Amino acid sequence: MTRSFIANRLAALRKEMASRELDAFFSLNFSNVTYLSGFTGEESFVLLTGKDHGAANYFITDSRYTEQAEAECPDYQVIKYRDKYPPLAETVALLSREQGVKRIGFEREHIPYSRFEELQAAMPAGMELVPVSGLTEKLRIVKDAGEQELLRHACACTDAVFNGLCEYIHAGRTEKEVEWQLLTLTHEMGCGVSFPPIVVSGERGSLPHGRASDKVLVDGEFLTMDFGCLYGGYHADMTRTVCIGSATPKHIEIYNIVLEANQRAEAIMRAGISGKAVDAAARDFITEKGYGANFGHGLGHGVGLDIHEQVFMSPRCEDDLPAGCVMTVEPGIYLPNWGGVRIEDSVLVTENGIENLFAATKDMLCL
Image 1 (cartoon, rainbow, N blue to C red):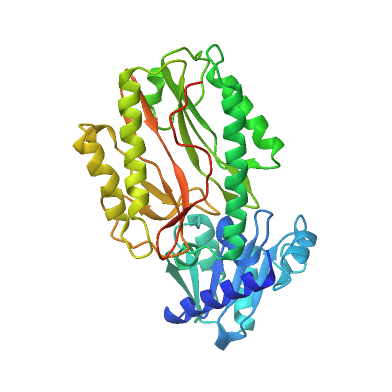
Image 2: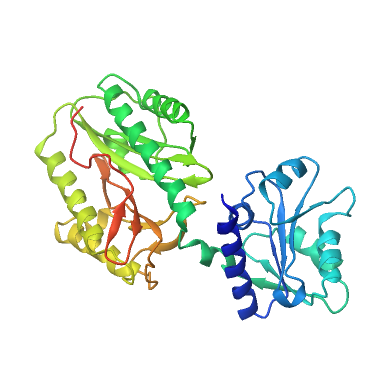
């Protein structure tokens, strides 16, 4: 992660802080800390003060990560608490007092109540803790060039894993064997997994988030695989459904409906369109074909440092998609006692359309 990306992110965050009249901001969410600092370790914290209070960048960690933080976070003063400094809450209060801070914003969705109590108890008279929502998450919606590069690589690796799986899958293997091969191929690509893979076949395909079992793959059924490679902290998210052996007319019907729903949604995606409108493009088509009741989840979500990020495309989403956001597009049909189909891409939204970050085919494959 180049320093220019971090500097731009910190400048954007300080602008948000000023708009909310915050003198400082304390972040403890792992993804937000990574975004703001470039740090790839764990259990560390960021304290930023505003322009009128020294514009200080403090990276607060302990002896396990001090050396790593000094190498990865050159824009920050690394503070080793529990050693030179007191416990975390007292360290935040001390550093804030040194900069004349009065109002400290904190991430209300990410802080345990016990830690909030500790911070509150440590605050001196005249210093206020201010709960804020989505301060950093709002900035993370639009991916900068560095993030886009990491996401492209994660998606290219995911393509390679899918292509390798297609050579491995056949009737007689179990779902768990397919999952193990998926994990092996991911490791061979030099990646981690974005989330525990979903590998379901036959009747179990009606479970949108089902986990692999000992079920054996048999001819004449679908196999759905939802997975992604994790690279440089960034998540790919793909779903492909393949047929084992020969497809029946019903397999072909359901698959083609989901595929067209995916294509209709992607055809209208561009900067400025609402998530609700994109969701409707897919959902209305599935409903028109008689399967609206079998598509229960939202059409897609943002993806990046977290597997699920803003914006969330659903019938209730009023937010517009900005240029530079990366979204999943994942319509599905799930029929109890029969199976299901889901086809999912990760796409970069541009001013004039999208860039599909996957090259893997969406044509129906019979393996």
